[in-house]
Image (tube, rainbow, N blue to C red; front, side, top):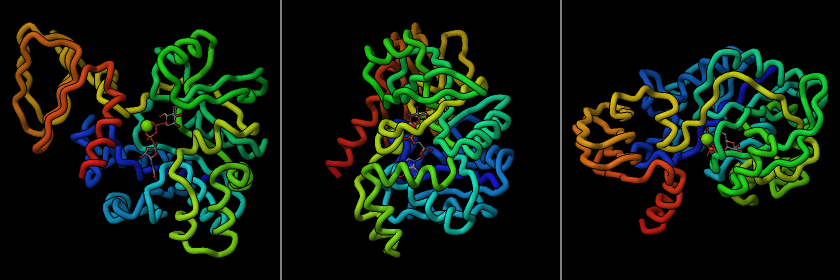
Length: 332
Ligand code: GDD
Ligand code: MG
């Protein structure tokens, strides 16, 4: 069977202040009626026999409410996708034995052809026992993504010669020029494949703890907070890439809005519940929850007014909001 593992435990810090630790981005309906989580679960059902949602303790009740038919795996601590995926994959293997796990992040917008491509990748994972990544043709040197250097393609996939998570801008430009692909953040693997790679990574103390029958809390205590990309994908020699052609976008930071929402005559892109007046102001992204926002003589900004918070950032610095939120956390 194919099990879709929906990742819904992140805080979405780059979408601050709409996304806050008590109301992360997966629960927001910024891009239409349905939340990102609801949309992800709907497409998970298209590719899988069973849907499992992985989230951390603080969001578990809300996930159960929003996804009453899905199995929910709860992490005792938010330690990023490395521990989350190792733990969930371990539990899935205990319950189901042989299967393919398809990992679906809940912050993507995807277009037609998604389900077919993921099923294709799942078949490669089952047949080869390798860790399957999905490669997207890059359209800009984005620093928010991982980059895959593919080897020679045969039978619809290629070995991953190198994986580079979130390079700086100059390196990203080199990767794009060299023909590397974006890591879509979607994966397919058999539990055996992922757990073998995890044993050879900073996640190994968690696998050992689980083998010894330790509680989830103990297992999480023993590992660092680290994403699967740094913990496993950058190290393993066992990854392959399946190229995909469906429209794909990570709604990770405010600049993503202009890629997925229409702009008005001034180039203004508005999200949420907001009315915008622009005077001599162009190409701004504005998001708010029930507000009237006026812009005069400014361009290329993201302006977000949510609850009692306001954020103003140049669109091309939108990735840096993560650092701001880390800084705010340290002060709390
Ligand atoms: N369960 C759980 N627990 N989920 C988590 C956790 C956690 O501790 N932390 C993050 N997530 C979820 C997020 O909610 C999101 O759905 C998904 O995992 C990915 O996390 P992001 O924080 O959005 O990752 P990213 O976008 O910076 O980077 C990843 O995705 C890119 C493409 O979208 C990497 O895989 C990159 O290499 C990739 O290019
Ligand atoms: Mg993301």
